[in-house]
Length: 197
Image (cartoon, rainbow, N blue to C red; front, side):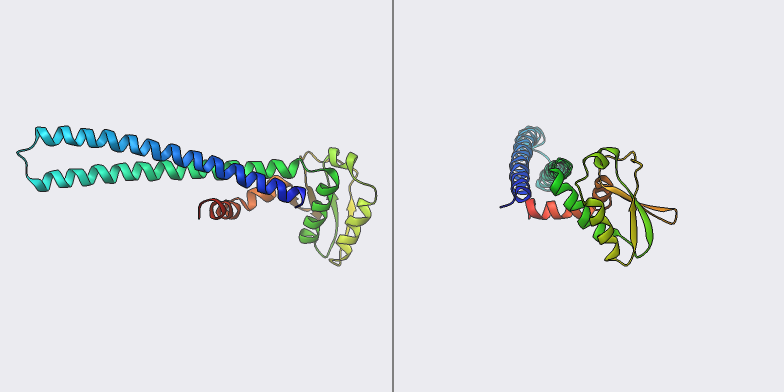
């Protein structure tokens, strides 16, 4: 199992534990609300015993429906918190990668986003300093494989990670945060499916 797979497994295990805890907490709160509502319903039932059975049944149904709605709302909020936490941890694991793995990932991203044109690629000042030897050649090869060419800019951009591609004055933000933001709904759906279905 690779380090990334271990991290993913650990993230998923931690997310499942947090999800189980939040769901248990939401269930406990729902039980407490249900208990309080039942006690309240019993008190009201005693005080209005002269009213028709239909009115009592109708009230109980509304209370149960309200409690169920509150329970489902709390469970949904707990799930959304867990999903957000998992995505944040996944982002943090990507930004904390070792340099070799990080730059290998950038090359894969470049293979996806490079265009068959002449352009320039910008990195953060931090990434320019820690860029492995021969990486600029790999960037050129990746661009050539798309029938284009890229020049690595010596100018460090004010970005945390990833890169920015510039073709004829048009820039494409390929930072990790931009990638996560663009895929947030899709990633949320996948995490939800993995954890809760």
